[in-house]
Image (cartoon, rainbow, N blue to C red; front, side):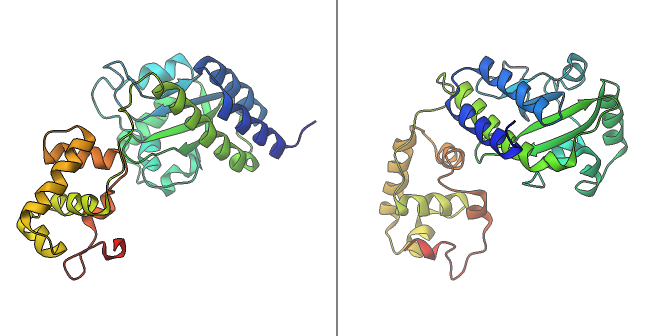
Length: 261
C-alpha cells in the first residue's frame, strides 16, 4: 500500500495532466475519500446566476447544501468564505471563530449547513490575483470527523485540484488572450495614474514630459485593447501586472517603486 505522501504525489501528477472536468471530479472524489472526506467542493466565491462562465464550481456536496448556498446576486453571510479572505492556509470548521468574529447571521449559516448532513470540514483558500476569490472544501457526513493529521495532504490536494479546474474551465476561451508584457515605464505610469496623479505630476516624478507620459499610457492601452485609463487600470490589476499594494503603498520621495530602476 502506498504512503500518504506517495498518494499526494500521484494525485498531483494526475491533476496536472488531466484533460476533462469529469475526470477531475472522479479523481477528487477518490482522493478525498482516501484522506477521510466524504465530500469535496472547489468553487469561486461569485454569483453563478448569470451562468458562471469561466468560474470554478466542481464537487459532490449534497444538493441540500447547494440549494442553501445559491446567492442569486446577494452576498452570502458565510463565515467560512470570510475566513478564506483572511488566511492563506487551510483551516478546520471548528477553527473559523478564531479567524473571524461570528455574528448571529454567521451562526444561522452554520446551523443551516449542519442540517444538510455535513458534520466536519477542512477548507483551503485558493485565491489568484485578478480573479474572484475561491476555496476548496472537504467535508464528512454526520457523526464523522476529518483526521487532523491529514490537513497538510488536503492542502496540497486542494491546490493542485483547484488549479486543474481553473485550467480546464478557462480553456474554452472565457479568459482574455495573453497580453504583451508592459515596459517598466508603462507600469510606473499606470501605477501613478491609478493613484490619481495627472500627466504633469507623473512627468515630474519620473523626469518625463507630460506628452511622453501620455504616450506611455496610450501604448499600454493598446496592449490591453482598452479605450480608457480606468479600463487600463482594471486590466493591469486583472493580469497582475500591477497589484493593489502598488496602489496603496506609501510613497517615498514622491515614488513608491524606486527599485524598478
